Image 1 (cartoon, rainbow, N blue to C red):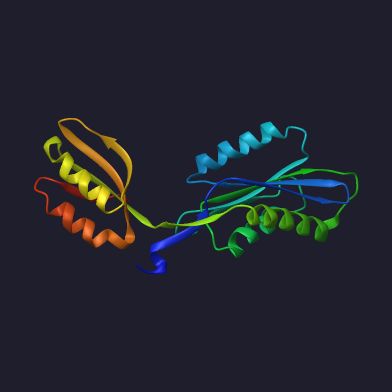
Image 2: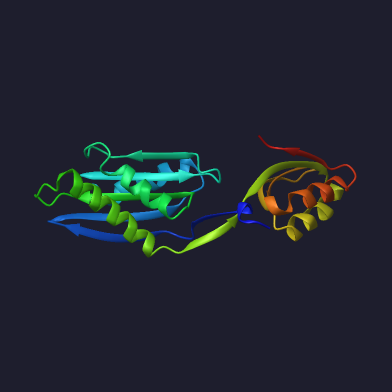
Length: 202
């Protein structure tokens, strides 16, 4: 197994608070698996902080780390979302969302001050949030007769595959995440069971 078989992310949610000249910045970190996860988390934070002046965020998704989004939510361009994303990237993590909620304290911080505040709040929440490594997985769909269920599930368990979706009738369908490091072995063993069709998901 190599480093390329794993990716780093945060293990659980975290919260931290940063104050500067009367303004309060409350930072939340969340592990997320999809854009839908992000939308729900942002909605929940907005409900918890309806009187906040800004709800700025950044996230990065996927083991290739190509999916990301930043928002300054009304702050001057580049003063919130990018500094938050910079903290996510500095830790080389993905599947992570950071939302920083700001309560204005009456004193203008200026562009450098805002950049520092959002960067500091994001950095603080990552300091209190444990990181973990997860196996990079490739998704496959298996179709097979119900009589093969025990044989298929034994391999799924032995190779630490993730069951994503399951339909168990006379003819079964199983969508699984196969750890990259065990992929060759998994394809060989599933292919060795008579009547099991294996198809890579796009």
